[in-house]
Image (cartoon, rainbow, N blue to C red; front, side, top):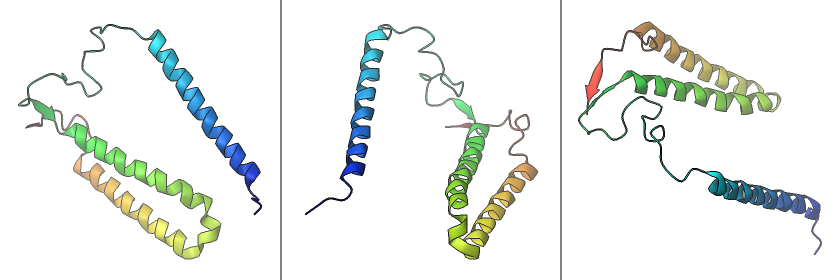
Length: 131
């Protein structure tokens, strides 16, 4: 039995081995160069601005989560738009109008967020939720 795709599989195997080798080298270099002790910057608040070691009963701003969900919705839009644009000529009018409907739905969601003021950061700064 003769394998017709041996060259392609060998290239793929070589690529996978190269990736693992590169990852191993970079990981090893990181272990050699990294700082061994913690500093105050590493133990400080992370991204959201909250103290990571505070009690569970603290208040947090609900607007952080509203903005995060908005970004999630529009990230999904981009994830679907790229493959759709690549195969647009193959899927025909049904695929085109399906994506138009999807984009229309997301536009309605965006308009609703805009109208309700969910995207206005100053409007929500005083509203907090306690866990």
